[in-house]
Length: 327
Image 1 (cartoon, rainbow, N blue to C red):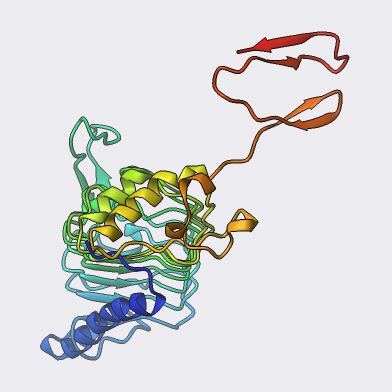
Image 2: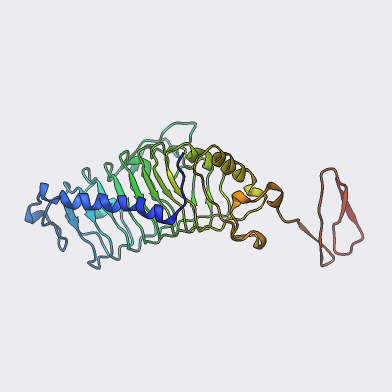
């Protein structure tokens, strides 16, 4: 297991995305579009890459060639990215798509589904068709996305997914279904508060996962376990980790992996105040406690510690005449 948390390391891993982009630029000279096939006002001077970035576009240019391999629509004002916008039912050869720095609030890669309904893990895979089924890189950072794009698993070749600087709040059970070839998942600088325990179960080839600068206070142990056996670099720094009783099991796993010589997550506490700034690994289970509940009696609050087997009486109304016995 190779799980990491250094911001500098994640930047070096992210440089691989830029390296891929540079490689694509070197491939420009291998193909050419006929001048008449280039959509106005995009640039298609060399190679199968259409550069439609920074043009103030509010709609997708018409006549996108079906032979396009790479399409750059970043730094525009696009609010929608529907398949019909391209004038083609499918862009079969499209491998690289950049739509960063637009105004997208949602993104769907699905052209159609079968009639079997929503996929469940017990009913097998749901057949679906993507309008960019051969896509290898999808970069949609700096938008207003509130959810992961739909239909990611319909693109069987997807390897790099860049979704940083959006408004994504959770990672659901089926969001990453069938993404078995995904190698890099960049989700830093979102608003993620929850991750389904089995959200990462299909990511068999994952190498980089960046969850830094989100709003996580805890993480399900099964999610940690599904990542720990991968040769993946994982960044969970700068979240809002709440070091209480809910992180006891995670601390034990991190401690176990560290003792076994595996680099593990560094979880730095953000709360409660007396643990802020401390490394979770350096705390004891006895220090990871949850606050006692507060009960109200006639408008007054009383702290009460309840032990197993204790019998208590709690008033049921504000007149304090009656009380309910609780064992």
